[in-house]
Image (cartoon, rainbow, N blue to C red):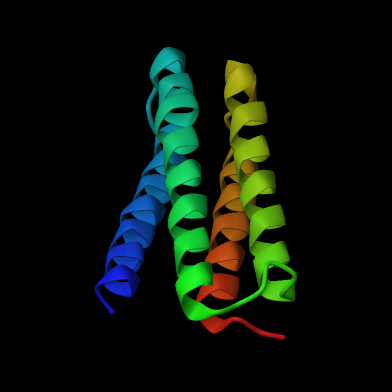
Length: 117
């Protein structure tokens, strides 16, 4: 039981890191700060999300082939790709890309919470 609670705690911390990364990719005016947020915090947050998710998967008895797991992995990679693509050039900091990243993150979160299929 303590293992599940620990993995859940780390998963929520990681998800907060991902949300902070999304904000940090678009809100600061300094391009270097935006890049450091995505490359540093985003990569670490995604790794922690996957590691804690794998721990929950093992303790919960789910399979990696479950559709909601595959969907959340694909969406999380797409989220990071969107942020990396956005911070590569300062001219790409647009509200529409922020909306795309937010939707990708929320959809991955919804898959993790509701576990459809």
